[in-house]
Amino acid sequence: MTFWQRLVRRPRTVFLRKACFQIHLWLGLALGLYVVVLSLTGSAIVFRREMDRAFRPVAPAIDRTARVRSEWELSADARRAYPGFTVESVGIVQRGNAFRRISLQRDGETIDRVFNVYTGEDLGDPFPMASRALLWVTTLHDDLLMVRNQRGRFWNGVGSILTTVLCLTGAVVWWPGLLNWRRGLWVKRRSRWPRFNFDLHSALGFWFFVLIAIWAVSGIYLSFPAQFMTVVDWFAGPQNHERPVDVALNWLARLHFGRWRSHTLKAVWVVAGLVPPAMFVTGVVMWWNRAVRKRLAARVSRPAMHLRQEVPGVE
Image (cartoon, rainbow, N blue to C red; front, side):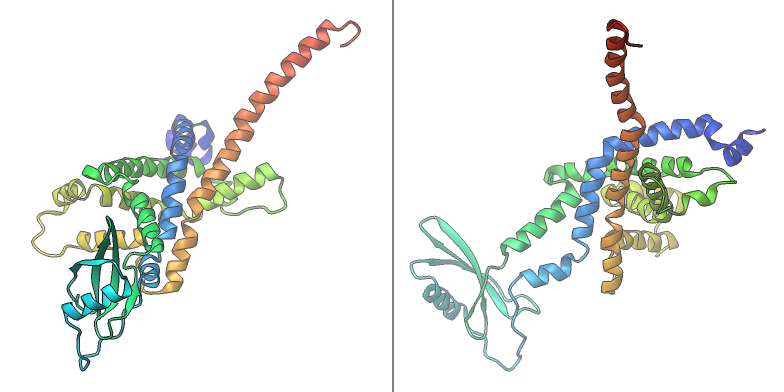
């Protein structure tokens, strides 16, 4: 039987499959926390734009016929709203927003507020706590909270490369053989817990393989865009016009972040982001049952056997 025949019919006897299993196991354990954090934060920021708009002060509607209050008038409004504070700066009216940002200070304390340019009404904090929390989650996902010199982006790229290897080795390990390939598609609900856990891990890996692989590969692209494009240009030629590969890369970024107009599709992306953490948990449970639990049971049984041999009359 040739190598390919063994791989197709009896994959467990092939060294490649055994090697991929070990790589998949230890890489999965090593990357577990990273994958969980990136997946959960990725799900959390799918609706980032909608949440950011909801958290920030509601901008008044643009009224071309209304009179816009001057900088002096808005400064007076701010001082009346916050007695004892002095106005440090008044921002410009940005396109599409009928408010101006005003910075005030008193005894070393600085606050920022936004005011309605038509009425002088205090609209609130331009960057409230909820928005800051959302930015923190986004920075954790994009840069691992290491923004300086793009250190976090670099390690995200390394993590994406290793996650891609995890996906590829998982695909090799998943294949159960030609006669049993359907077994890895579904979960037998009435099976015992270890079997149920194994089936769940296997089925999730099959049905979500493409999406997880896209997230991993797009993570490499988003972390190392210049290097990634150098490789692409070498294969696809100079970028004199929009190439099919450029369209594919735009879609890659869109698929990574779930940038859809449909809220239903975005909700699907949020739920799909929970799959990698579920796979990590089921993978750890399998490793615990197969390796750790057996070793612990063996260590407990050895003293018991010695005790039996030392006690007279006990066999």
